Figure 1 (cartoon, rainbow, N blue to C red):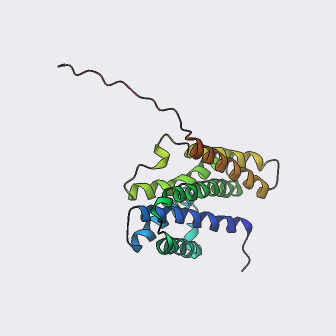
Figure 2 (spheres, rainbow, N blue to C red):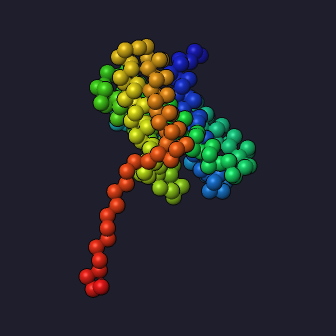
Figure 3 (cartoon, helix red, strand yellow):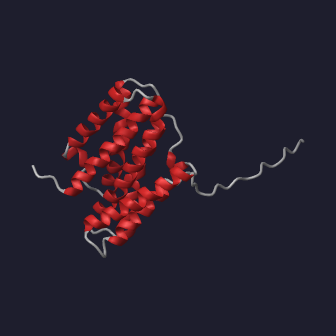
Length: 209
């Protein structure tokens, strides 16, 4: 069976996001079932939400190969993740790759269905961040998207870059541009600790004080 380049990129995104989920399971010292569960949410969660919102058949129901890829990634981490001191770094970069891939895959799918550029950008961000949010909630962690880290912002930048570029260049080049913008933005945030401004409020003094 011939596989299109878009599908191949989708497979890759599923794989790296599944790895990111399994690495969280490794940090939490879960059993093999925990690895499978935490790999599954980031790998297919965002795409599932996207397809439901767009009123499409959920992608992995028609093509269970996405589940097979997820399980292989989870089991691979379960077998080979034996260096705890490297897990955090591996998790961050696997998550960055998945984020960058899925923000353009989601936007591309919406544009192919002739939705507006605004909807395409939103679907790109949904595809990129929702699965990781579910993973973190299940693992009892604060989702990255709710922290001051530049995360969803990177997905927005990548999706916007793709949607803009696809008006002027072939889809494959536009997707590469979107991927590059998202990954570069996220990488700079990781390497240089970039974050969004945080607003803090002074606690009012107790009335009885």
